[in-house]
Image: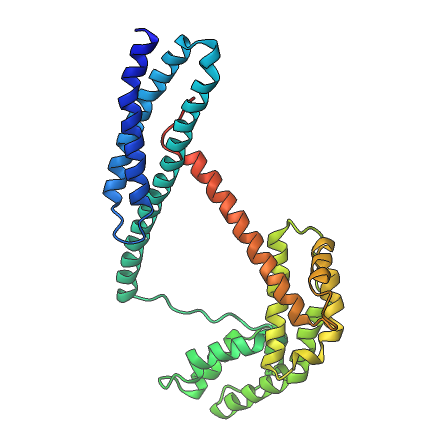
Length: 314
């Protein structure tokens, strides 16, 4: 077949390809009532035309004159780019729909299982950590202390089973009686629920942060931010105003983040007379969120590229 005949054969294939791309674009860009079945159908048709074009384009290039070669290659590339773009967008929507369908099935299955039987909550043993006492106390109170089906002696027996190390020593020697149950609770509160010791423990953690040296280490940055947020929240819960310790904690946290982030923060806050720990944490939170989102998009793009069900041009 000569070049002119090939181009005549290719023309309606290109026309159909353009039409399928328009249909796919229209359906993909819908925000409501998007038809997954229609997208799947159009995509199959588009890929069929693409297969035909690939063969025809190759034959045309073999017969094309040298002076027309550049224009021909450019035109073929335009069609190829359009097909790849809308194929990837359609495949992404189809995969998302499959994922959502699977999630819905799992939720329904888990809901049915939970409606039959819920797992028993386990209260962790308490070893005397000042920062963990309130969590342990709240869990014990909800599961044991307020359980009207248990006697005080039974509650005391449960309490002793959860205490290890210093906490067990604190109430060692108390007889297993209802009177001693209340006494043991008071002993534990007086020793491990002291506000001054809790504040000191939170401050100690904040003053001894492990620095992060690389701004690309997003996981370590997130860990650093979470530690700060946890202990600052703990201080606020114990009535400590952040402004009261901002001047001492601010330079420590500033030295704990990578130098390029420290410089970027200083640049953004240059016009402000006085910077606070709240300013620095807000800056750090936004930086981490942006970097996490960027990492997620890169991984998602790479995953889509690896899992593409069809191979285009080689």
